[in-house]
Amino acid sequence: KFNRSTTFTFVTATKTLQIAEVLYLRWFAGSQSGIDGLVGTAIRPNLNTNLNLSSMTIPEILAAGGRSLFSQVTAAQRVGNVGRNTLRAQRLRLVDFGIIKNTRIAENVRIQVRADMFNVLNHRNFGVPEGRINAPNFLDQWGTNGGNRRIVLGARLVF
Image 1: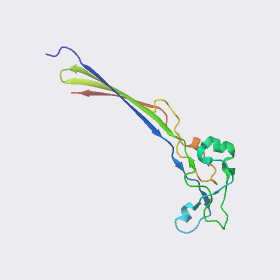
Image 2: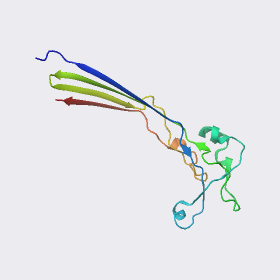
Image 3: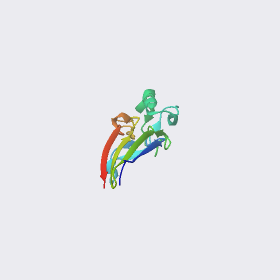
Image 4: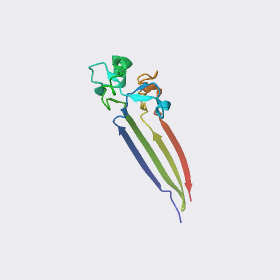
């Protein structure tokens, strides 16, 4: 004979950290034939500053001059002097949390109630901004959306 209910509670938590996504700087020249006719010719630009851009955040680069820190390569150059992987996008910070509660209602019947919370701290997680220097939205990380806090509630009857 069944006399009392039994309750079990489980808690899960996940923290995701991504240091930074590499941002490729490109200057798109005029179109050529083949695939270049669709996307242009991607050429690394020249750097017009002595600032260490690899240690600066995107807002700091924009405050220092943004697009004016770079220039188009000359006809005599094949590739500009900006190093590979010089700029990085903002890092990703996510904390996810979940709680599950199982309660026995009858001998062979129980109910499970759960709450899953994604991006609990509601950090703004930017995507990779535009890296084409001659694009109107160059380094516009605010135009990307990594999502906001989400809470999913659910219940399940198990018999």
